[in-house]
Image (tube, rainbow, N blue to C red; front, side):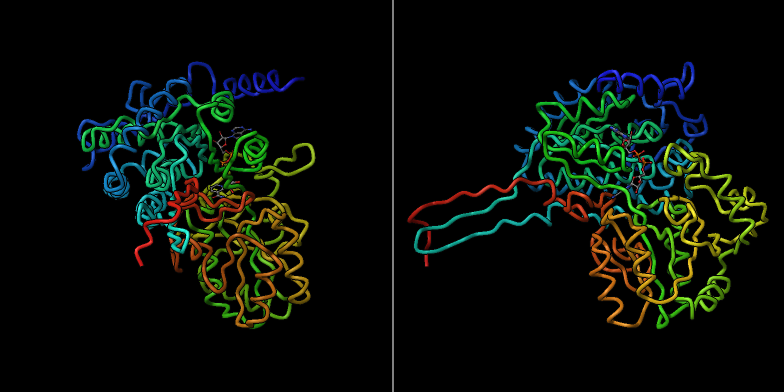
Length: 489
Ligand code: NAD
């Protein structure tokens, strides 16, 4: 089968799965009853946005045409306008956090409503124009100026796990850098992405008289993603998602910034503060029911302190499953496909009580996560299981715990966590895991500024190495040199 046929088959399969008469833009009717929001006056507050909304296109070519015009307008408008637009995105996301969080939750049906809201509020910590830096070189030969220039149009792919947050985080970084965007959202969150796109573009037009800078394809398909990948007027791709899309993006003949999958391991050694470790892990895993790529996914504990760690988890309010219940949960949530386990869609980001029911356990109100002992062969250890169950594995000593952490991170180079007060262990693990993000003694979110220091982003470029993306990530280096003059000292 050639690639064209393969794509056609996949597209047909996706459409069949959506069912007759249903489009990827459709959303539950409850979304359309949301209250109007402060930042929008005439705007739709439903995820069922029509293709006539500003910046929402059925055809990639139309999206590119508009993005190209808008990008030229942005270039003419200057830096101050870019800064104002980025601040506007943050303010709108904050003002609309409740209603947009609800819309995304109703559409995607994964994760936690309260955290959908928090994720929109956290966009405030995404850096804007202030992050751009020029460098000057001055000497006997004159002066040179290094500038961070826009690429033009960036082709963007967003995940279902954070549809509006990733769209907005990317918009702040990319538009601060002077670019426009053509976005192929995940079909499962496309209605929310299209709604936010239209709201943002409407305000950009009203306040700055600039055409849609965010151009979102709706309905998105694998075919439209492919068109974006290959479009001659899109010089740069920025892709956030799992292994399939990461591989597809890196095969293209143009540059791709890829924020790929993770399977963050945690190591706990003899010197850890177990209560603090328990509170940190619960906070990281409970966040949006563990949908975050940085969230703690499996724990390796040195055997001599294993029981103390488990006691601390119980004290901190996590609900423990027995071995039989964990086996039952695994039967329910995983399917075996060809050569690997895959998580069934209905359990992605599911609530602890839903998982408890599948495991045959009654989980009390207030238990934010489930946990239990497994061995390293459990699929909960090897798979990136985006759900609030945390498997704990006994390791004979620190070295073996570290070996397993490295093994099950799978070389994604994403995130790893340690709880330890032994500086040598922290240093040794930091070197060995070689991940983009490495947290010691805090929740996984510490590395994105929530419970730790540093700026935020919803796209952590891992296989391509750019790290926590920011406006500079989306710029081209340009140098202007004046030979022999303008050095005034
Ligand atoms: P996904 O891979 O199913 O989908 C991501 C996007 O890629 C969607 O828009 C989807 O439509 C598109 N896509 C999928 N296969 C494609 C292909 N072959 N060609 C073109 N487009 C394709 O992922 P998801 O379930 O939406 O998100 C969860 C995954 O994303 C997890 O693996 C998570 O770790 C990862 N993620 C990573 C980051 C990061 O910053 N590194 C952030 C969020 C999510």
